[in-house]
Amino acid sequence: MNINDKRKGQTVIGVDMGGTKIRTGKVKDDTVESTASDFVPKTDNASEVIDVIIKLIHEVADKNVAGIGIGVPSVVDSEKGVVYDVQNVPSWKEVYLGDILEKEFKLPVYVNNDANCFATGERFFGKGREYDDFVGLICGTGLGAGIIKGGHLMPDSNCGSGEFGEIVYLDGIFEQYASGQFFQNVYGESGDSMAQKARGNDPVANKAFGEFAVHLGKAIKTIMLAVDPAAIIMGGGVAESFDLYSDAMWTEIKDFPYARSVENLKIHITETQEIALLGAAALYYNATV
Image (cartoon, rainbow, N blue to C red; front, side, top):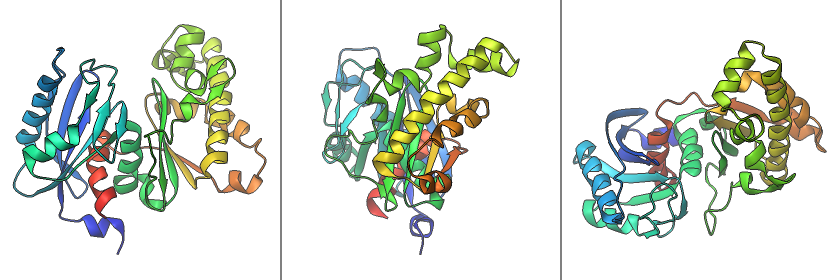
């Protein structure tokens, strides 16, 4: 029986904790059946933010819900469900979110960072269903990743695995060169703006994507050396412009010491709709299936 057969019929709540907005979704099989959302309160009181999350979960929950998964853009103690130092929610310095929500809903609650949720969502709902070992790589305003090994999210001690964007590179870190930050830092424009210009055959934009491709290719080679994945599944805003840099990226990747690794590596762009909510819900399946 495969992972999809094992989770059929189960209902799970996924919570996407964004910097400005919180969304919840009731997930059953491969479908987000209902959603609710609200803005993150601008407050110094951490409890007020938690109250919004509780309200939004109640709006989509029913008696059939088996568990709750939450994705947050910060460092998480996934074993204890503790969230630390959420950048866009200053009041959240150390929040025992898992315990609070388990007490409220009398359900198991799983908390992890957004990159790990992306990878887990792809494993249970997207292109990652084809692979037991892959990396889910978010290439947007930053560069983050989740690692799937043996069909499940790779456990770690401090939520640091997959943070390839923080690896030292040139005069900074990979994130400054292999994400949307590159276009802003070097060319003073967003990745979306540069993509529009590149599609209009603007020479400066074409040059920018050629440079970006080399940096991303080097980041992917570092990932290959670290965890040797069968595939990399990419998401995020810059991933949507994959056609503008994929050829040059592969040229860089092919300069790798192990030819067999290059030949076998597959790189996909996510096609999963509502991946943030599905990824959060998938934390439950990751722990139970």
